[in-house]
Length: 265
Image (tube, rainbow, N blue to C red):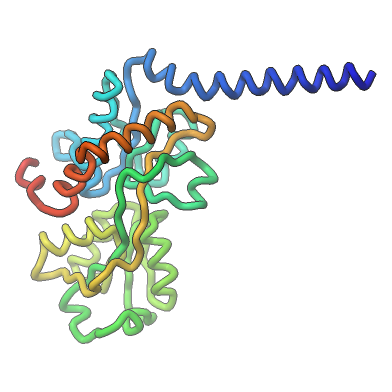
């Protein structure tokens, strides 16, 4: 009887192993057979920008198109609100996320991350006139000071920690947070370094970047559904290759270190 139980257990484990192995292979196989790579993006300048005609551009848009081209596939870009993008991935609506997503332990419980393909940071942009007499972060961390950030973003999490005594206003979209600072309704905006830099460069008479360094630095990775190891292996190999040939660094410099891309929009 015991030998029968051991046999059944071994058979079960074998079938389970084959099922898992098949599931891992199927993700990449299905994408290849479909002929289209479905990539989830979210509107964060300059990762993904959408003009009035609905045309998409940005660092992650270029990255998604390059990946699909290297796979010999078409690309389908799907735009999601930030809070909906991971659920969309796990429901199978998209194959991967390329949205400037910071690699964090809490997110890694929900999705599988590739190795980093980019890096960024979080910094503080301030309304110059409203903060002209403020000389330290401590002076900004008071109840009468309003700090804004984007909900469910790493900037929002950091703002809640650094400015725990200030009045924190979280918005669904970056444009709303930026508007609050530009109109003087918020003293500061905790955001990704590129977004804060662009805001200050675009409105130098209104917005200042008072800190010499970022409040936080982080690595950015692609996200796929758990157990999709074959797709993850390909993405990691792609990152290594496109870093070595300088395509990724050159693209990052174009989108994050200059405003040249604005002239092309």
